[in-house]
Length: 200
Image (cartoon, rainbow, N blue to C red; front, side, top):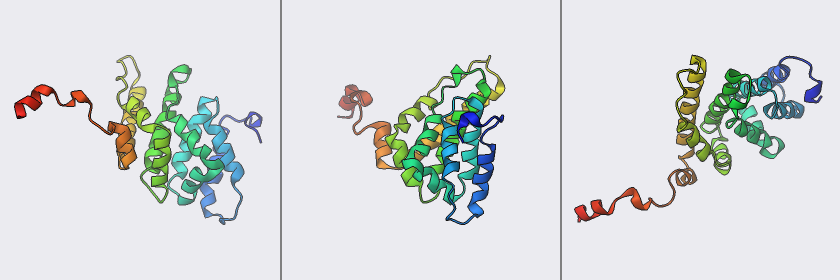
């Protein structure tokens, strides 16, 4: 069933419920449509749908069967959809609180996925290929919200910064992540010539 046909307020509630319960089902069950729906929800134009989809990931990520599906489904495009939500543009919406929850949820999920289970290193590889180090640094270095911003939005900003820092810690466990973070050589100005002369 296409997204446009689902005339309910929160179109991924049913998918979330079935996904969560599916870990008790036989491994041979075909749940491809459920993951297809979840992938579509993560790319929806509706803020409430994206928010619910990222919350669904947070509910199911603790189960190994779902972690593997997140990586394997549609050749990894489901995971890529989650990664893109970590960069969701929350300023171009009329629902700022819901919109700010989307990248916060996505980052929280990516922190977990990159540090738990047999797929953690695989997740790190995918994130590095997606230039996630640079995106996480942008979030960490983002300006503090002004005093005019509501307390819930300020709290979500702090959550995003904390999750981004945790994600950087996970990614830099790998050599490629450390290289992406600091480069292969120190910049020339890292140690001034005056300091070198003094040491000599």
